[in-house]
Image (tube, rainbow, N blue to C red):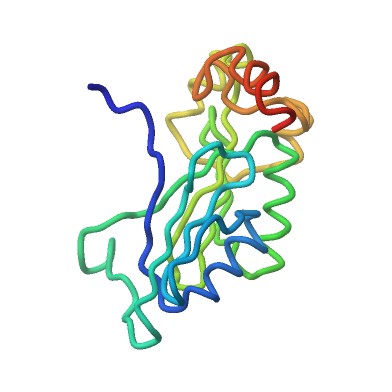
Length: 183
């Protein structure tokens, strides 16, 4: 059986309440289930997964992750947004929370980078839809440049759906909207 996609991620955090507040207030996740005071399962706003993120509390004495500095481990998770309007909104929210640590143009993807209260890095990404990929955009994918979000909005449109034909099969959004209503 072939793997289709990442269904959810689980993170160890120092303080579940602090992490839940960050992921809900800043990134728009919603709590789906709590297991006592030490675990929470969250769902992304536009997700149909049971949950997308699990959080397990270790306590305030937990040391920071050494991944990428002194130990092997995960570098970051990447979540896809639906539009550049969503990316712009999250850029403001991450900045206001002091959690925005970078913004990059990878050619076919436009990315924000943030860190949660425990310093765990994540990426928020918008993918250029297949029908808008041109040779210059594909060529630009071999390098990383600073993201000029307004330039990308002007080029692609603020409400253009992310990744149609790339990360999402063409027509999937329309079909899901018919079944679930506006997502």
